[in-house]
Image (cartoon, one colour):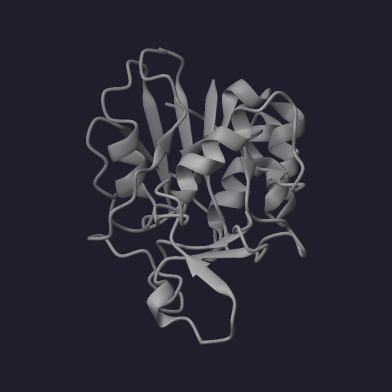
Length: 217
């Protein structure tokens, strides 16, 4: 079983990020043109880092280094504050746990990930809201030729990108929702999760999964 959970805006305080050639920390946001002129370096993941290489490409190279982590980046499973991420990481190997990041795409839970403030949620501030028309060369660390069942814990704002990045996956994909009307998820098995919780209801869904009480039809 492969588990994919959406990211959250709540990051660990003081989480590290990539740095520019002049030493400045990079603040990754969806619309850097809206940032205040405070001297900080704001950028999108796919912006040029200054030497013709995107920040995304630099991050991939950084992760491919043999165990080196000079900037102290956190693995995705430890970047987010809510305890469900660490709980999932404790129960599942990194090869079976992925995070759908609005900034970076579909990444493994052990992928060294810089702090960022990018989201698909329409409730976010404009600077953090990733527009549907924006270009993102999202990572997809999931092997689409695998045939293990996949279960996705996430809200409707993240579902279109989940479906796009996992399109063509050989195994069965299960999507949970908490609304009166089922979401559109082409090629996926859609199943309602009944709960009174409205905000971050998918955390509860994942917790039930970890207890072994989640019924997958």
